Length: 288
Image (cartoon, rainbow, N blue to C red; front, side):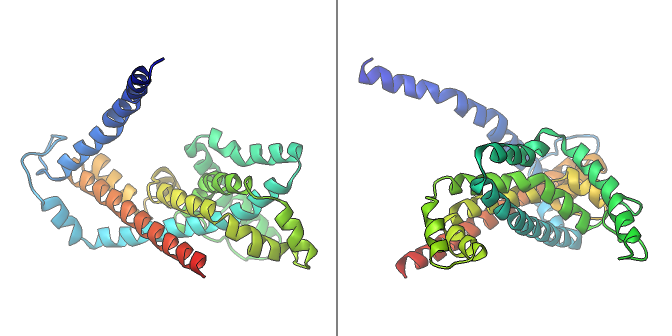
């Protein structure tokens, strides 16, 4: 095949993913943006004309500011707790033999094959006032009355952390696969304890995977709405839940679209800021 023909084939292969992106990603975002700048009309999905009234109403609404803070707090805590759970789990999988590694990895990824709704209802059974967790704590005499673990941020964080744990494990494990295990043995031979080896040797080397996992989990956490609705019980108002209420309860699609656009902008700003901070810290570390 000639060079010109290869170039033509390469361009042709890009047509399908480009069309996929334009039809299923770019065009819906354009529709949302257009609706967010329209005037709401009763009985119509699409508003009329061009207006910034939706954004003015949002920015002067205390509910939006509170939901923005709640969304950011839940996203940050979920990312933090998934990192605490995922890092030792990924290291354990990396150090294990092939048979045990495959079993643990399968157990870690198994929740991805179960519906998010099913998992949320499972956590409702576990965390309810008469659920397994409270019953076990009361039987052991650790508490006198049930602890409120659902219909609040605690339940949302627990459920979302469980859902997104594999998305933190996989980037870290992928980075671990490229590390030479002799570094671990060398550190141990110099007297480093296993905990110090993991924190001082392994963790700095897997930092790119950690950053990828943090960004991915944060984005998925702040965009989640099924788990906050079921485990938050409409009492935990995140931005996706607030947008969903505008779409389904008040049928104000223009205002709901404005919430979605602001959520997208918020995620982009946080992600770019975090990436810049991490890149700056890595560059300083290299210079030192």
